[in-house]
Amino acid sequence: MKKYNTLEFKKRQDGMIYYFHPSECINEHFAWKRGDIDIFITYQNGFGWCVIDSNKNILGIPWGVLSNETQKLPPLGKWVSCKDDKAYVYDLSI
Image (cartoon, rainbow, N blue to C red; front, side, top):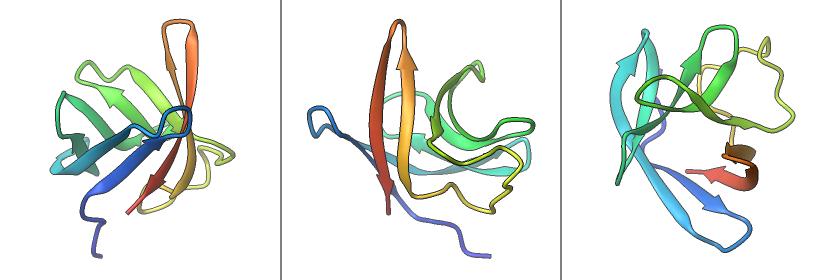
């Protein structure tokens, strides 16, 4: 199965774009690493596709996708993140 190449996370609030590039698998699942910091998109058992930090803390999830809807690749479209007491909406695309 072919995985996505670079993924683009575009913040709806201000148009800021973060690029995630293919990286080593995490827990035997595909992973993409953000270009400027150790933040990853990968699959976490029990949670589904997530954005995580290097300590595996969940920072973001796809909106409207149940964790039991196992997909081979992260779903494109709307994702939400939480940083401290603020939430942000992003669009994930290839």
